Amino acid sequence: MRAFIVLFFSLFLTLSAQCEKPFFESEFVFDPEKIDHGHVHASCIVECPNGDLRTCWYENGTLMPEPYYSDRKDKSDDVRIGGSRLAKGADSWEAPFVMADTFACSDNNPCMSVDKDGKLWLFYPTLLGVPENTWGSALMQFKISDNYDQAGPPVWKKEAILVPKPAGIADLFKEMKPDLEEKGVSERMLSRVESELEDPLKIRLGWMSRAHALVRSDGAIVLPLANENFGVPVMAITNDNGETWTYSKPVPYMGLIQPSIIEWEDGKLTAFFRSDDDNPKIPRSDSTDGGITWSPPTRTELDHPGSGLEAMLLDNGHLAVVYNDKLEDPRDRLAISISDDKGKTFKWTRHIEDIPGGRFDYPSVIQAKDGSIHVSYSYNLETVKHVRFNEAWVMEGDN
Image (cartoon, rainbow, N blue to C red):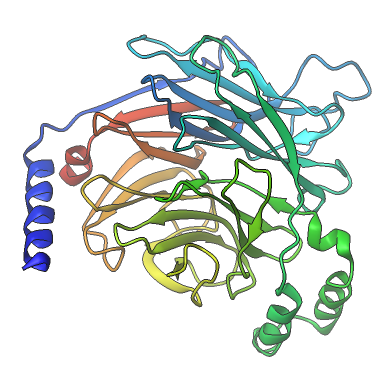
C-alpha cells in the first residue's frame, strides 16, 4: 500500500510539473563589458533563509602590488574568491565583493552551503605552490557565518583549515594497479604514484572542493572532495560545526574528481563525478551508510567531456544533473537532464547554453523554496551567469 501511495504521489508531482507554465530567465551577475575581474570561474549558488541568493566564484585580484599580481589565469598567485548577493525582490545583483583572499596564493573552486541552523559555510582550496605547483598543492579552508543578511560579504564567525588524513588510498592503488597496467599506464608512471603515496604531503595536500557540501538529513555536513595528486574522491564529514572531521573510505576507483552528492528520501547517498578516463559517460557511486563507504562506480547514460557537473534532488523526488553534454571540448553546450527513476534513465533534457565556440561550464544548481530551479555557471571565463527556470521548461525540451 505504501509503495502505491509513493508511486501515486510521484506521478502526481510529475503531472503537476508538466501542467505548469514553462518559464526561463537569465542575467549576468556582473557585466564583463563594464567590470573586469580577469579569469572568472567555478561559481556556486545558494538560497539564504531570508530568500536572498548568494553566489561565489574565483577570480583574479587586481589590488595586489607587483610581484604578486602575475597574470590573469587561475594558477596565478593573486586569485581570490569573489561573490555577490541578489537580495530578495531585487532586480539585479550587488556589485561584486571579496569573500576570501589568501595573500600571495591562489584561492580556487569555492562552494557554499547553508546548514540546518541557517549558518552559511564557504569551502575553498588554497594553492600553496603556485605557479610551479598548482592543484596538487591545495590546502582546504572553510569559513562559517551566521551574519549574512546584509549587503556585501558575510561576517565570518569562524575560519579554519581542513587537512584531510583519510586511510586506504595506498590499498586502493594496489587493488587497481593490474587494471591500470592493462590500460597501458607506463611502469614509470606507476612507480611515480607508488613513490608519492609514501609522501605524507601528497596525501594531505591536493584536496579540492567543487560542488555544494551536502547537509545530510540528520544535520551533518558532508563535503565532497577529491585528491588532485591521485584522482581519488573522499568525503569529509562533520557533526560539530567543523570542530572535528571524519573521512570516508576512498571511492573505489582512481581517476575521479569533483564529486557531487545527493541524498535520497530513504537516506541513501549517490555521488556523481567528473572523470578523466576514456569512458565518456558520467560515473556514479552509492552509499548506504551516510557516506562512509561507497560502491564501485557505474556509469550513467549521460555523456560528458571530463568537465565539472552538479546533481540535485528536486522536491518531487526527480534527479536533475547539469553538465556539458558533449564527448569532447570545447564546453560550448550546457544542459540539464532530469530522471524520474533515480538516474537509471533521463527522460528530459534541455540546453541552457548551445553556442558553438563559447565556454559554459562548472555549473552549480539549487531548487529555491518557491520550487524554481537556479543555475550559475562560468560564462566564457569572463563572468558568472545566473538562470532561473522551472521543471516544466526542461520537460518542454529544446525548441
